[in-house]
Image (cartoon, rainbow, N blue to C red; front, side):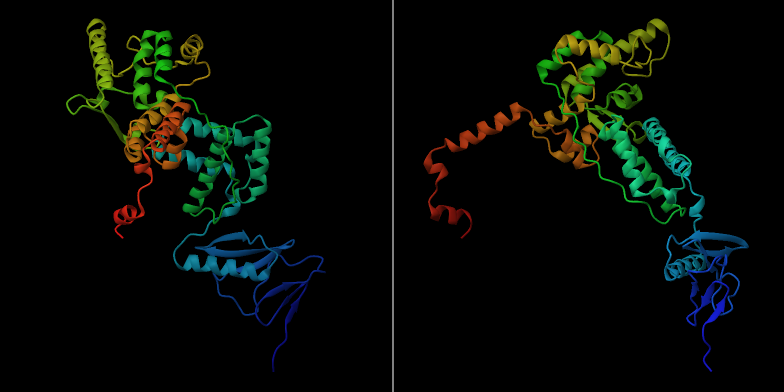
Length: 403
């Protein structure tokens, strides 16, 4: 005799083994088992409000997890997935307890392990996000909340590039949490179009005018940045004599000295102006060491002391030189453009300047009005060529094409 559904207070257990809670039940049971007797470790499904939760045990410890769904079938699928993970030896996440601060710790620790130099900027990005997400559970951070955060930051006057960096840090936190098994998914992140990217660069005469207005102890690092396109604060001002190989004629940065974590080298002998600059710095450092008796490890220093900040001198020098509004980072754009003008292949230029991706490199490969004019002059030369050059007979065209 076929048995019908089994009923309990506020719920019904169907023959299929599904648990159906009565919508009219005043107080649904906290937890309901399937029709057949479950063995220990097989888990269970119960309902809180309209949402189904699952429960399972590992080595005597009980785990509860929301299915985020009012569908009992979806909760059953999630439970089977968790039991399958347990059988395979994977420890399931306790996503309900993962908070925003845990995501921050994961990213900061990842930066420290990999010796990323931009950890201070990362921490600043998370400080901005504290006002919105501090104390929030990671599973409660939705795409809508992230978009609202973007709108608030824009209203505050934050640059789009700054907001993009902040979201990149948060997205990294979610990805690391998924990688270590704390979370299973992350919310969708909005795409921020950066339309305010800087387009500054120096022509040769502008650079000479700036150099004439700068203090003498800044001539070296500024010239080095202009010639190489290396980052001023983190690479040029931190350059040590241990990075200079006079025998091989190169300056080398190991992976710990660069922003993107890639090693880099720039040939000195191939660029005489750069070689002469480094040699002058070396001679000056040796003379100062003989006078003071102190070792000077940095290539560029201020009377043997590190150059901590050049913003004040830079700003006033730019104003006097007529290039107000320029920043040291414009030297990277200048170097990229000069390499493009010189016909250096893109792969070589990226390695010299230190761009990991071509998309970033293209943002720096600025085309000036002079470059455009030169391109049009070449086009004019083509159009002004004799007609015999520009309008070849059809048989000649076919012959050259191998027809």
